[in-house]
Amino acid sequence: MVVRRLESLGLIIGPLLFALSPLFWIDGHYGVTGGLLIAIAAVPWVYGLIGEYNALRPRFPLLSGLWMLLVLIGMFGTVAFGLQGVFESVFGIAEFRSLATFDIYPLPVAIVLILAGPLFPVALLSLGAMHWWTGLTPRWSAVLLVFAAAAFPVARISRSVPVAFIADLVMLAAFCVVAWFAWHRRDEESI
Image (cartoon, rainbow, N blue to C red; front, top):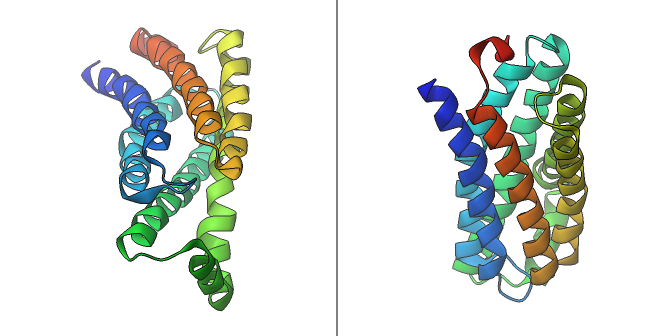
């Protein structure tokens, strides 16, 4: 019961820290504080998502295992993007220099940023679908998760603080609902 409560809190704290990050962006870039918030948000968020994995595993053993793999790879990409913002700011690297460096190391950049980063919204889409089918949360909540997953990359690609902040608030709302139902889930519902 205590662990499930902590996991539920992780589903709120992670998206909340993430939602605060656009407030610290500098000209559409994460910067030190924004990037650090993104990287730190991954820890409680993944912890909370492990609780959802535990609830989904009895219903979808293979699918939930593959989903957790997507979550971990996607969060790795999310942390990498956050730390990229931190290091660009710390070392005073302008965007054009950063992008030029990516040309020197195409495979590592492709693996870390281009492949891993987009897997997190895919994992969120999958979570919404699994919640829809299992009824762990109401269907409107699953739709909110899917909407938040779709808004996530749009917000990041646009580099617009208002768009990112609104998308992140939708994400926070979606995960607050998931956390509410996870908090109140009975042990036999997780089996």
